[in-house]
Length: 120
Image (cartoon, rainbow, N blue to C red):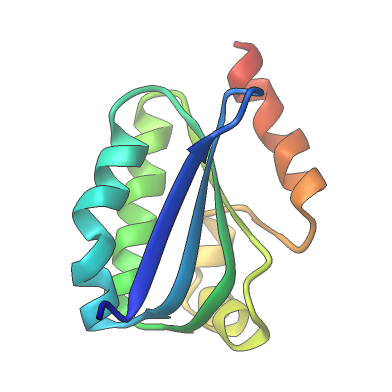
């Protein structure tokens, strides 16, 4: 069984919602990396990544998030992170990723930040 599960859903509002659940460690990154890249890199996209179920974040997980965020930005899209658990939020902040990828504690604030992408 994979250490990280990924579910995705395209909302009526044009926002792609990705939910991650488990450990975003080496095994977790290997389990979801290709699917995550495919979902976030195919087109201009507004992507909300729900991190509330992620209990651990390793450097490979950070690489996956950062590469996808950069890819989305290159296509005039945006990727945001929502509700990371305290230890995961600390890793994102300490590593400097939180300054590169917007992070929100509230889904509605994240959706508001993404609406400008879907309206364009």
